[in-house]
Amino acid sequence: MNILGIETSCDETAAAVVQSGTTMLSSVIASQTDLHKETGGVVPEVAAREHILKIIPVIEKALKEANLKWDEINAIAAVPGPGLISALITGTLTASTLALIKDKPLIPVHHILAHIYGNWLDRNNSTKFPILVLTVSGGHNDLVLMKDHGDFELLGATRDDAAGEAFDKVAKLLGLGYPGGPVIQKTAEKGNPDAFDFPIANLEKNSLDFSFSGLKTAVLYEIQKGYGREFTPSTLDPVFVANVAASFQKTVAKTLVQKIVIAVKKYQPKEIHIAGGVSANSYLREYAKSELFKFDLPLKYPRNITYCTDNAAMVASCGYFMYQKDPEKYLKWENIQPNADFNF
Ligand code: KG4
Ligand code: ZN
Image 1 (spheres, helix red, strand yellow):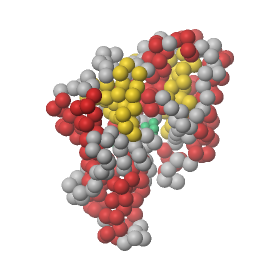
Image 2 (tube, rainbow, N blue to C red):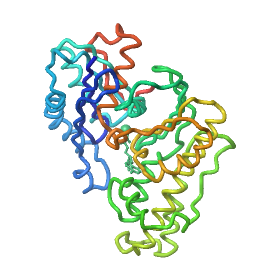
Image 3 (cartoon, rainbow, N blue to C red):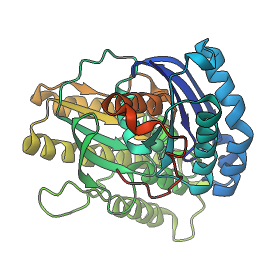
């Protein structure tokens, strides 16, 4: 079964074709990163205009690269939310229009659940439930117990900033640009992760929630200590910047893995998965491997870095497994409504 996935929830216009939920036949991503670099973050109206320009060429390219015609596509999966409403409208309207004129089932896929399926791509489907999943991105930071396809329990979430958002904000403070994750990872390679002892948020004992705004403030205070309240990011000493980046990155990894450890002990999953933009981080991957080794459980991250950040292959994969559970549910082209706060 071939599913066309469509993703426009933030600043990537993406389309992909995935076979049987796991085999990526094409994955096309038109990234707006360069556009948003100028403003140091995503401006929703700018993102929306760009989605409108890119959505049709991106879908056409995905079909071409998969070497498939419309009659070989069995269903369409697209994201109604959560995300930026002005961006979601383009993907959902395009998906429902295509479902109507091409007469295809239409599967609405939750963006965070789609991230979870980044770990099904390019793998055989030999997964054991329950799975403990950490989805960690710019807009979300959730710990989920996945008992089966379509059966998810939210165990914890961020109370303020998501980890990716903290990477982006700290990168801005350090004058490193946007998006923050990749550039902090690169800068941190030259720094000492033990140079600064940044705090881990002190929530109630065994809480599975996250909080990263205090860490961001601690970084700000550390910079102000050396450079004054009105510091200019571009004038910071490169060694200091590398040390702050490395220490910050280590604190984020420690915080995330600490929660995984609590949840593994409590819920006894058969696998541990990490997904979303921040799961691309190589320090986090290594740190998680070393700390979770003792549980002797499969630890999975998306196989390809492009399956960590926003893409449509994960949407198509999630759509496939939803469709398998209940094909009758997805027959109507009206099945999708853009919703910035869409819940699962
Ligand atoms: O999943 P995603 O593409 O979008 C959302 O759904 O939010 O995640 C984007 C986030 C950004 O905050 C970005 O800084 C972060 O993922 N990110 C990283 C890395 N690559 C992307 N964070 C840490 N290390 C990375 N290598
Ligand atoms: Zn995302």
